Image (cartoon, rainbow, N blue to C red; front, side, top):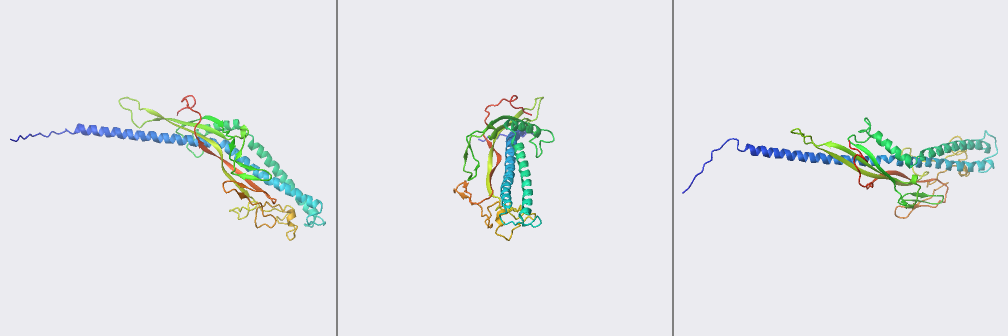
Amino acid sequence: MFVVLTVNAQRGQTFPVWAMGSLSCMVLLAMVLNYGNMLTWQFRAQNAADSAARGLLAAQTTQWNQTLTALHAAAIDEYRIRNILRDLDEVVNGEGGCNGGDYHDIHSCDAMYLNLRGQYMDAVQRYTADALLIHRVATPNQATQIANMNAALTQMQKTGVCGTANGLDCGFTYALVGTQARDDNYLEDVYSDCCTFVVGGGTSSNPKPDLTPMEVEVVACANVSTLIPAFFNTQAPTFSAIGRAAATSIMANQEFMYLGSIVNPTTGNVFQQAEFPEGTSGSAVLANSENDGYYRIDYGGNPDNTWNHGNPAISNGKAAFTYSPANAGLLAATGWWSAMPVPTFKGTLTPGTQFQCK
């Protein structure tokens, strides 16, 4: 015996299920979008803090790089002065190939003396300007650098500056929450003196506080509204996007070069060409004489130069180069400072006290 059941179809039976399913999907979609928005703001906050921390260290790294540049210029003028003094000694004593003619003869000791004296005075004037510039650039101490960092942080948050190449992300409020010296008794550096130099070999050091690389820590914070809208007179929730970052000054690039041999790719000539201060034409007065070498100022290191082949450097097979000078010449051994990220160091911070959220 079979029993047949029949159900009469009624319109709208699936609507509640569809409505609840659609609402659930919309809620899940809103939650996913909101979570993505929170992640986006958090990444943005971290990037903002990283940029601020590394950018603020320019107060120290730029100062040190400018000091190194001025020192390089002063070293060239000092080398030039030493060579001109040697040349003056030659002509005063009637040596080095000059003759006893009058001032009209460019080969005469008197004519060469006048040219050398003028070149000497010019070099001394430049050297004096270099020394004054070094003093002015190198004078700010670490307290001044920190004050400059705070001033720069204020400036980079201003309307019209933030959001540009010279500013920070406008969506955040920034605070410099910590500064300290990185005195680790070991500073990777360039060491040089009268007789040798080492690049990349490491220098154990106990620097003065104002010459110690700094570490800074920055917080970037913003109060952000969620993507979930308000409903039934309920205020939409907010969250705080906080980024913390620290950075320190390091000598990021170390280099050395023979100024008289490295070719400038723009001009096709070596960076520091030989100079002839004994004349006014820019070339050797005694060019066809073996005495040319007595007066020329050669910066050394050019293997094609018969007067000065330079002083080849010897590598230890790793990162260090050393040399022992055998010929006169000027070799620049230096390094350039930049910023690198480091772990934060201020511990637990208090919102509203140590930093504010925009």
